[in-house]
Length: 139
Length: 150
Image (tube, rainbow over all chains, first blue to last red; front, side, top):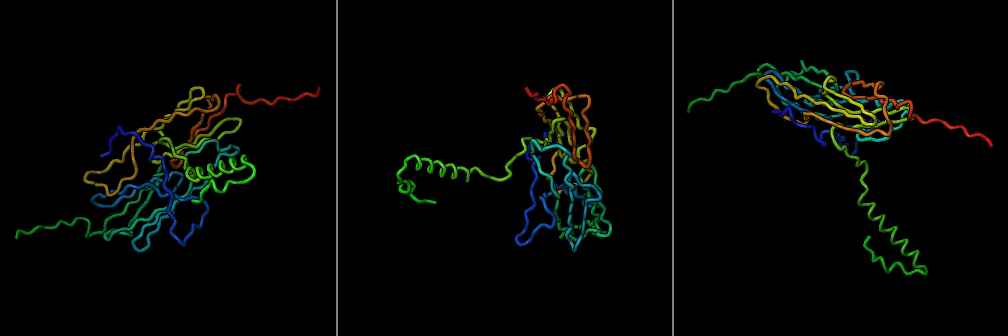
């Protein structure tokens, strides 16, 4: 489990840029980053958490096609007016990431919310797969 | 690339040859040293600093941090940013499939190029991004000096 007294490290501040596949180009100018994500499973659902600072519910686009869940977050670059960038450690850009879902997700009831730049997607498990106990028979 | 360098330098002017060698050497080193956008964040969170003659704006990306867990203090020219990101509270029996996000405390101290009017510092936390505006102390603002004709 997470140690409450841990300290966030240098690598936690770095953003990973999206690798564009050969032959394709981004339709929006600027950079795109892969949001860091956690995925955990509870009895009822699979939960995805993704760090997307600068994104809110209006600039978020989540689609499910076949079994691929795509997350797109647009970040409007808001540079302070009449200021010059004097020192930079990070760059601002959109977020993109795809997840392949396994069977057994109730795709009609997927819900999502975003708070303080963290996206949470709830992927409820579909009925029969919810709790399936396998009985081991004695030979 | 792998030509024998000294055979090439046989012109009339030895100084020009030395100059050329020097240029080729530095070009070679540049090729090794040059990596675009190699600015690495020294620690968490990464910050950007914007300035003008009236002050500075410091921004930082802090997704998942509660605004009440962020502590900003300004003393003279020094800005100190501390806080923590709390781990997710999972219900019993939940298990992780993937963990890329980390949690814990952070501290960053930053030296600004001027004294800050500490009473007028403002901070806004929106969509996981922190904006701190730091006005420059009035006494330190640059003054325009009129040049009189003699």
